[in-house]
Image (cartoon, rainbow, N blue to C red):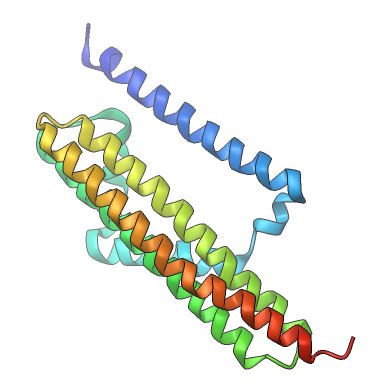
Length: 195
């Protein structure tokens, strides 16, 4: 069996898993409304744009694409370790940019407290930044764990799984505080409106 045949099932299962997860998220959003409700350009620019910019600044353009090739087609031990480190960093950066977007939206909500028409877009930025940050982090940490499991040392996969679990827990908690704050700002602002 040649290397391409041996590696192909990994790529197929990764694409199938990612597609299945994306379809489940799309289905859950469609049950409550429209997919377009979850498309918000300022949140996408905040989370996606800053994450890509930070990773490109740190790894260069080629260094951003190399780990994805390693994830899909494999590589040597050093390539697998570098890809794992990249995906762990990507997860951390995306969680941080999710928090950043959430706080930007929160500040916008507070600065427009008396204008009901301005609170909605600010709340959307805040909440969807958290959504995108967690979603991108889950993708990155899953990729890190998948890449680490292919490395010859079992310790790398175990350590990567632990780091990813801790980072997601801390990130979700860090995002949860501003999200709860958003809820209370919305309640307070609604009580001041003359409906």
